[in-house]
Image (cartoon, rainbow over all chains, first blue to last red; front, side):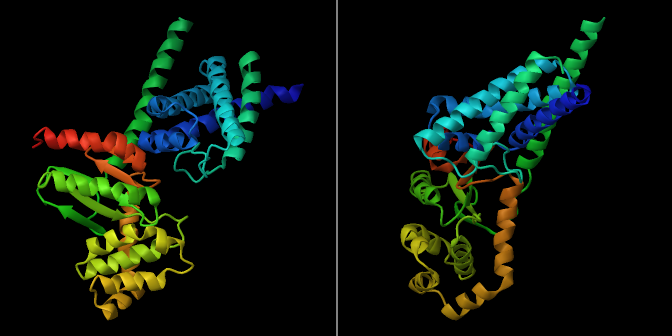
Length: 139
Length: 209
């Protein structure tokens, strides 16, 4: 019980930092890089890809940093839930349909952190669970 | 008071969160490109420059070449293509191909060799060892083979290649082809075909200064 008092704030900051990092590393690159990776998944409507490539990194960056700073933490956690769920669905669908996966999930832009799609799916499922908890219970 | 303070904090945080990545991105994308390691085709005074970071073993890069050739042909004097080496680490024979092309450049035959590499990409990139093929292409291009082989062994040649690659990395190039046209970037042959090509056409037709 007592561990929860310090554990969940750490989880909040860790998830926030992860998403902020992912968003930031994509934002400091031209959006066309992420757009090319999204296109490679071949599951998204092509017309939506340019807009998603520009919107998603901002959502990651803002929700992550808001969570790190504890500003509107539940709203930020809820947004991260939605993002994690979306990423999980996309990755799972890609793996199941074998529609051609990029070797790198593209999750962290050009940073040294390169995950394969299965690794990214595992990470997204974990963050989904943790961010759900953060959304529904005050951290 | 408290809600008011929260809003102010939120506005300040939002402003910082917007400014920070955009500033870093702007600094990266406006970094100057070195002349070293680049090769240009088209008029030096052309108002539209296409800066291409390319990998000779990349199939998408090969697919972009006819579009570039078409633009140069249809808009002479208006379009210029500048090539930078960007051999990808995952392509086993990219470095030898780029070294060979750079050595062809030293004898004034870069573009001839460049075109040959893309035309024969399927052949040499699938070979167990394409060294013999790369030499044969050099011979076919009329290069002095003694100088060519000597150049391949010269460490300075690789340094020239890496200068081009580093310039691309500074501009956040991750995959190829990456084509910069003014402030816009087009990554991959599909983006270039669907967005870049019409953009350049409209610039060229617009009587661009």
